[in-house]
Image (cartoon, rainbow, N blue to C red; front, side, top):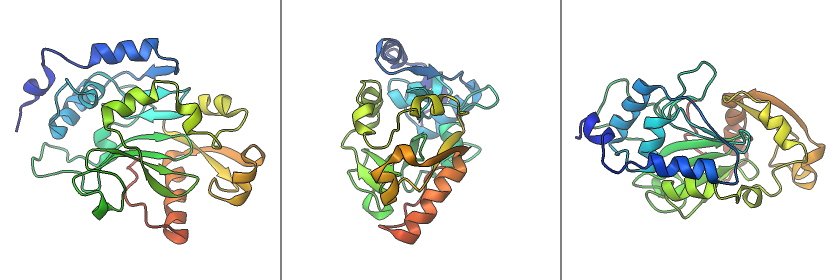
Length: 241
């Protein structure tokens, strides 16, 4: 076990480089104010250093709102009311450091406005019903109700999010006025779509669907319930939001 100062006080932290990427990148990015104590609690439980992008996010940010809030990247939780929950809160970290605890199904590290979930695979993805290799990113897609391998680690995923390729990734899942609707959401809200994103009607004409703001817990719950009913399988843990 490494103590918090050993994890946080490093000679070459990732945060300055990440700040440059956030400022210079083509994707609108809002850095949420960090909750220092919660961030350090998360860092200690993760046992990663501030040299990593994951460590830099939990230590220096309350999370990121990207593309006007369409993607929410989890960090150390926001000290401001109505902000993003922390990585530890979403993943159910124990209240006090527990060296025996680990996220059995992997680590949820982000959500999007439609209830898509970004997760970092644990040591046995197949046992958790997820594709890809240990330590790689996966995505629970709201239009297929299935996990998809992303073939990249967490730091590369953050770089990819900031690279301007989200438009291609979300092709078919965005409607003409999506940016205005998303920007009006609170960080803990998502968008429900009816007919549902996985329906034939939504696939044929997403712009013609009915949409409303809803708590992210509700958006994720609807997707999880239908995934269990319709298949391909139970998606498992999607985060406590």
